[in-house]
Length: 94
Image 1 (cartoon, rainbow, N blue to C red):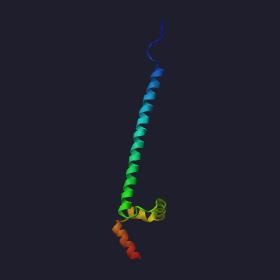
Image 2 (image 1 turned 30 degrees about the vertical axis):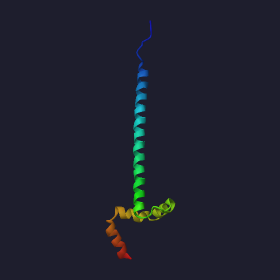
Image 3 (image 1 turned 120 degrees about the vertical axis):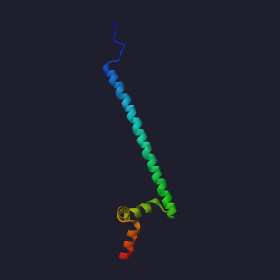
Image 4 (image 1 turned 45 degrees about the vertical axis):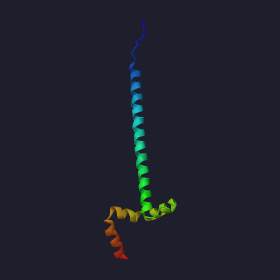
């Protein structure tokens, strides 16, 4: 008697696992690409803002140090009252 020509149950499951893994790799690649596009857009937006503010020539290390130093103030401005109100409160307190 000859062996069965049909693939075994184990082989079917292995094939299915390989297909699912390939699908997962495809999904992960798309997510990485999406994140890379988001990061590139964020960098581009930041550069545009810096140029608009005339800060395009500032060294990144100095800008990072400045932002880290004033992080709490910046977060308060974003999460707190409107920027105009926040600026007015600072002027009033001085």
